[in-house]
Picture: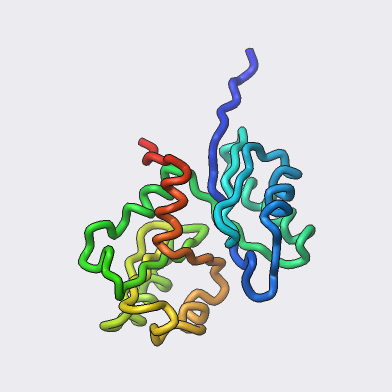
Amino acid sequence: MRPRLVTKRYVALLRGINVGGHRVEMRRLRALFEELGLRDVSTFIASGNVVFSTDTDDVDALRADIEGHLERELGYEVATFLRTPGELTVTADAGKGDAHDGESDASHYVIFLHDPAPESLRSAFTALESDVDAFDCEGREIHWRTRGKLSESPLFGGAIERVTRGIPTTTRNMNTLRRLVVKLGAVPEV
């Protein structure tokens, strides 16, 4: 008897799409994912958020395939962070109802990692905290809350990149993540 294939949904959060001179039309990005045999491919806003289905649950191999294909086709490295809709829902729910949730003068960003943050990285983020910026490391995500606009933070423009040097990351605004979760109709996996 052949084993039954189980279709899994993933969200790929890509670094460097439509920023820093790297322009990619969403139609082309969808086609690149389809070339890998991924199905039901769709994009969400033009900043490198791709939803797709596959029969594999080998996330590391899947990520390597996507990163390699995108680098060959686009000509530059594209760090890729895969999450299930349920995982993304849990991330988007973090901070709901905290002291700054919904404040018009507060911003909440999520820095995505491939693996849980090592203690050295956690300590480096703790050292950056101030009355303007706060960080919470939760598994493979670092929640960055800043009072005011991101561009007004003293950390804007390089401090985060210096701390994460050598560690692939991508960052998303919490409002974008919550809108993506609504689009997915996602519920946390049990």
